[in-house]
Image (cartoon, rainbow, N blue to C red; front, side, top):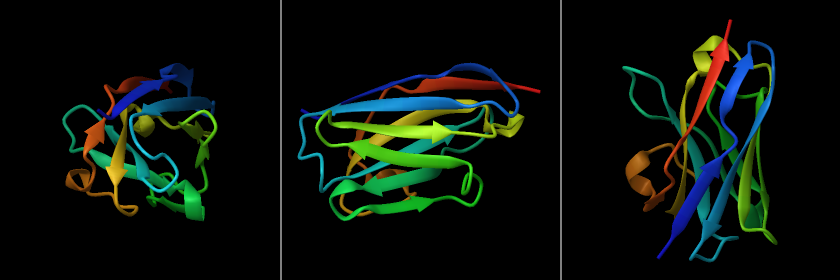
Length: 123
């Protein structure tokens, strides 16, 4: 059974930084696409970053490109999302997702999901 545990959310001021972690178990880590999605109150879930660590393939949404960085530590089976220059519009519950065949921002392309971690950016 694939399990994902997201952590690292919290309250931060606009312009600040946070790093989210997603610990993954139960799958071959390196060749699975692993993504971060987020869902703000009253909005649809949005894919923002994705990585396939075996081929260093990374993809970002326009809303976070240049501010967020996704990275993986294969030895720890953990994917990170470094978030810099945070804005109030980044406030959302952040989810990590795995078991993707390739990087995608379509939620149904991923078979396993973590429980979410809340990020609140105060202005």
